[in-house]
Image (cartoon, rainbow, N blue to C red):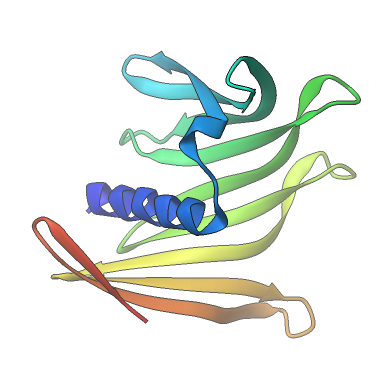
Length: 160
């Protein structure tokens, strides 16, 4: 189940990058691991196939089962010449996998602004993706996107 969710996330990232015109050769990566787990990954923008410029930094935290529980995203600030907290993806595991997008709040010095979440429901042969936005006025989550995927051992088909 965990492998399927990660595979789907990677596949969706590739599709989004292709549609957005992002090319893999525009970025370079430096990954630091500890006991086989990625701890930090720094993303550099590549200029003229020669120069690397700081862009993003990812910090990973794992739960007791070895699953990612938090992916912190920091953006490079040219003015201060340092990485600054931007947002965090918080992962919750149960009968489904929930990923919350929490924006960094300077005033609170915390990831306190949760405005979006994704829920992955996995059943026999199918996976459902549900995207939600937080509605401030109604004080609840609004479903904004829903996709169903049917998979076999080596194939994944998406339906909207």
